[in-house]
Length: 251
Image: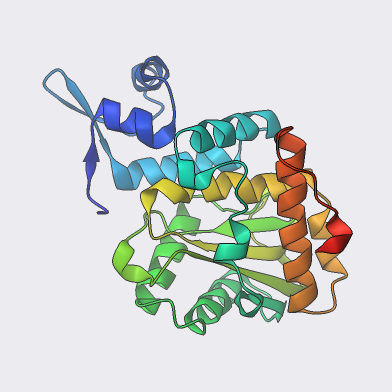
């Protein structure tokens, strides 16, 4: 629920942080919170916006650390399990996304999601994405943006899914340092427990593999899809010594 209020213990499980770290953030007034008597409460909708913004700005080592913490507590999000094949299909990708402005790119990404027939509230999703971008751009210096609502509501989607668009020319989308953006992921999470985990995983894939450079030269959505799935396996292999190595050329 978008207006859910989290207790300190619930926030520990939700963000995979230590209680002491959260108390320190509260003391420094660096995290959204409310005080009710002696109890500290956290509005989930504000926490989601705060957490996603912080996560996108973390250095690689800290994103990796978060990803490991989140996999450790969620068996279905195991570091051995490739998520992208379940969540992004070839028809979820537009290799020639139209749009020269931020508003047009967002609109066209929503249209792409709607064509999957898995979005039940198109206008609600558009509004949620626009409001999230008003808070802080989701564009990263690497050339990709991770569009997502500030909060995730089960009624908005049939299931969690990921969309990807590659614009035909660079777009000024608000990335740090004025960097241009060509790749736009739209992350539609039906569940709280998968949302931040997906942000961390896709961010790591974009920043730690050559997939963006590879997809720049991809001929179509099929090529981009194969490259993205291979990049997820590469990232998992690099961060999980126990993960069985696989031949990327066999994909």
